[in-house]
Image (cartoon, rainbow, N blue to C red):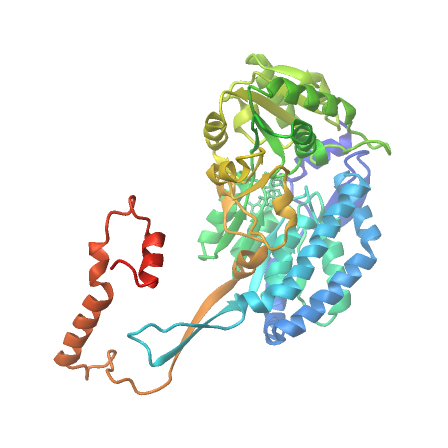
Length: 526
Ligand code: NAD
C-alpha cells in the first residue's frame, strides 16, 4: 500500500478542512474538495428551502422541462462525466458510460411519468360518504437529503435525486468521500440549466457531513450505503423524526435449476460476480446449482472466470478495488472460506493483490462462513451443489440480507423468483431489474427498506394528500350531532345488507374467493 492509499483508507476517521479524491489504480490525487461543516450543511438547507417553493410551484410540466434539459447536458457531456467516474473509481470507461446511460434513462422516465403517478386522481367515496368528491394527490416533502456510495457514483444517487426532484423536492446531495468530484459534476451540470435556483446542492465530506445532513432538519433522507452506516443514519434521523429510505448492502444469490441454459447461467454468474470488481450491491456472491448440472456449470463458470482479468490495461474487464480497505474484507472472507475446507477453483488467497483482485470461484464453503454470510463486495463467488430447488430457496433465504437475486430455470423461473425473499429477482438474467426504470428498487431485512425507481420511487419522496369536498347536502348527515336514532337504525340495516353475509362465506381453501366473486357477478350461486 502506498502512503497515499494509507491516507485514503484512514481518511474517513480524520476529517479536515479539505478532502482529496484519488485514482485507485495509481494513488494519484484526482481532485480536492471542501469538508462541509454542520453549519455549512444548514446553510445549504436554508437555500434549498428557498428554492423548494419555486420548484414545487413549477408543476409537473415545468419541472419536466428542466429535467429534460439537464438530461440533454449530461448526454452531451457524457465523455467528461465518464472520465471523472473512471478516475475516482477506477472502473473501465465502458462501465462508467453504462451507468451514466442508465442514470439518464431514469431521468427520462421521471419526466414522463411523474404527473401520471403523483397527480390528483379521484377516489370512490363509498356509500356512506356518497355526497363527497374524494381525491388523492402526492405532494413534495420539501427538501430531500441524498447520501450516496462510491461504487456507482452516478447511477445509484440518481435513483434518488431524479425521483426526489421529479416529485417536486429540492435536493442536498452528500456523495461518498471517495467520489466527491462526480457529485460536484452532477450538481454543476444542473446549475447550468437552472442557474438561479438551488435545486441540487452538493455537500462534500466524510461521515460527519452525512450525519450533519441527517440532523439538519431535511424532510427525508435517502441513504444508500452499508447496513452498518444505515443504522447510524436511522439513529441520527430519529432525533428529529426525519423519515428515511435505506438502500443497504446485499449478498445476492443465483439459483441454477436442472433445466437451465448452463452457458447463459455461467456467463451471467461471471458478470454478476466479477464486473465492477464485485463492488455491486446486487452483485452475485453465492450460487446454488442443482447437482444434476453442477459439474457442467462449474466447468463453464471457471472457464469464463479464467478469461476475465482485473487491471488498468485496455483489455481488463474490470478495475481496481475502489476503496483500499475493502481489500482486507475480501482477503478475510477468502481466507476464512479456505481455512474451513473451501477450495478455490479459480483465484484464491493469491488473487487478492495490493489494488486489484482477480476473479475467485470458491466451492465446498460452509454456509456459516463469512464468505457466504457477509457481504464481500469483491470479485468472488461461492458455488454450492443442491439436491433440489427447494433446498436452494431455503439456503438463499437463510441470510440476513434480501436485496436482489437471480434464477436460471427453463420451466420454474418465475415461481422460484416469487419464493425468494428479496426485493428484486431477475429470471434467466442478472441485475436486469435495476435497469428497468419503471420497477421499484430496494430490499428487505438488512438490505434496508423503502423503494427508489418507478412509481414507488416517486411516491417515496412525497406525502399522500387526501381531500374530500361536499358535493350536495346528504339525505343523512352522519357526521353531525343532528343525526337521529332512526338514521342510526338505517345505518345498522345497511351494514347488515352490505356486509352481513361476509361471515357466511364457504371455507376459502375449497372455493377460492375469486371464483366465488366471478360466479356471483354472473348471477350464479348466492
Ligand atoms: P458507506 O456506508 O461506508 O457510506 C455511504 C455514505 O454514507 C457515504 O457518503 C459516507 O460518507 C456516508 N456516511 C458515513 N457515515 C455516516 C454517518 N454516520 N451518517 C451519515 N452518513 C454517513 O458505504 P460505501 O462504502 O460508500 O458503499 C458501499 C455499500 O453501499 C455496500 O454495502 C453496498 O452494498 C451498498 N450499496 C447499496 C446499494 C443499494 O441500492 N442497496 C447501492 C450501492 C451500494
